[in-house]
Length: 183
Image: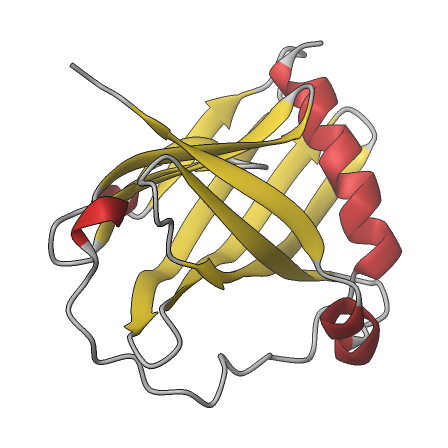
């Protein structure tokens, strides 16, 4: 399946939970612990056969590169990505917002926030625009090889109803990230 087809599949998901006027706050905990050494490196999780998440944690816990399940590989410091579409005059633009990790030593949990501040997809039949906030939380990997998380994604699609945070919060997606060894 080509990248645009995979993106369209993701947008169907966003349409089901979409909207454009509400903003979700990120937790009430304070994460001021030293970033766990076992989490430094590249972590990947498969969402579907054609979609995955990837996060590269730096030693200080910062996130400079990701593979977004919708946008694909993104150098966060560059602020986003532009993709040419397969059809004439089609494209996709993804503008990143904050991407950060917080470690909570009192519960040995890592929280990650990845904000896709704005996306625009020009398709042969029209334009889709919106934003997505993705929040990952789960206990720090003891073995340094897997990280099991709850993923809560809030998507706002221009022209659609706002997402219902209660439904999303009560039904997080379960993902297991695997550490990738890049030698």
